[in-house]
Structures are given as C-alpha cells and as structure tokens.
Length: 165
Image (cartoon, rainbow, N blue to C red; front, side, top):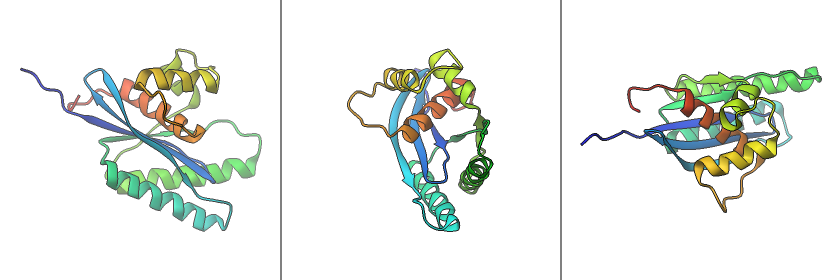
C-alpha cells in the first residue's frame, strides 16, 4: 500500500500594515485548509511594523512547520512610496522564511489568479470563491489578505513537484 506524505505550504501576502498568511496541506492531489489569518503591523513606526511582520511570520513558521513557502511578487504601483514600503515588507517576509529554513518562491498576482481561477485577470471575488471550493472552506471568515495568501499557497501547491508529494 502506497502512502503519501503531507506536504505543507505557507503562502504570504506581504503588506506594510497587514500581512496575510495561509497554510494548507497537500496529500497527493488533494489540498486541505490548515490555517489563515493576518499579521497586524499597525500604523506606527515603520521599523516596528517590519519587526512585527518578521516576528509574526517566524511564529507562524514555528507553529505550522511548512515544507515550502510562497510569497506574492512585485506588481506595478503608481505610488512610489507605497511600492517601497511593500518592498520592505516583502523583504522581511522573505527573510523570515529563509531564517525558518525555507526557500520561498515568488509568484505575480496574475500567475496566482491563473492557477486558482484559470484567468490571470480574475476579480478578487472570483479568486475567493475558488479558494473556498478548492479547500472546502464554508463558514470560515477570511480577511482579504488571508484569502490572497491562501491563493498564493494554492498556486505553489499546484506547481511544486516535491519528492514528498
């Protein structure tokens, strides 16, 4: 009898005020919801916000012990200041994953939407609807950041070809 090992994926949707995370398990071709939420960095000192993101992700990695991590990649921003702050938050997320023993992969929003919905230009509502179908989530309330992080994790789970899977 062949057994399939659990492969746990952490998805991260970085932001300078709110960073979403989503954790799912992959058993063969089946994806199962584990956890999702957001790290609230607030609006205070920017260095403290980055520290909150780092510490939060470090705790999530320690708690859920993922085998892999995926982070939302850069996309076009009209506001340079917002883009720079997002870049810092992404850097902290990548560092937390690296220090947690993971080699995070980055996916653009269009690639994530294509993987989850089949359309790289899908609306957020379509993505959230498919997340619920794919992971069998019915009553769980998902913050937008957490839903985005789950979509990133789903994208990576679909694309990864691990010896554990």
